[in-house]
Amino acid sequence: MIRIEHIAMWVDDIDAMCDFYCRYFSATAGKRYENSTTGFASRFVAFPSGARIEVMSTSTIAPLRLGPGAQRMGLTHFAVSLGSEQAVDDLTRTLLQGGVPVVDGPRRTGDGYYESVILDPEGNRVELMA
Image (tube, rainbow, N blue to C red):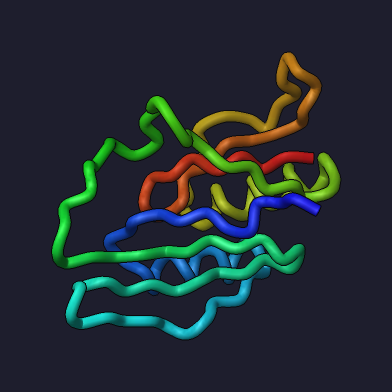
């Protein structure tokens, strides 16, 4: 069976990203890995479904920065299925109350999804969908 195992993203604050996904998405953060020779550090955040995000930092390269929520060519968002429209409404409300930027929704899209779009602490677009 083919499935996406994980996505990876460069971040400024590995621990803040792990805390965010653990707090709001019932994820579990793995141990921090560091390689002082290469200036690389990372942690995996695992969701109950098995999907994972690798959050990484580096001191040896300067990844290109885009503004929070920027639409770009290539990977521009990832979607998290919450199972129901009510779950989308509830988590969107909780995130908004927690000061998390809500970019859009909740709403029904033209292609039939029920979703909202939020920004994580590093400005990545995350679709919350039913």
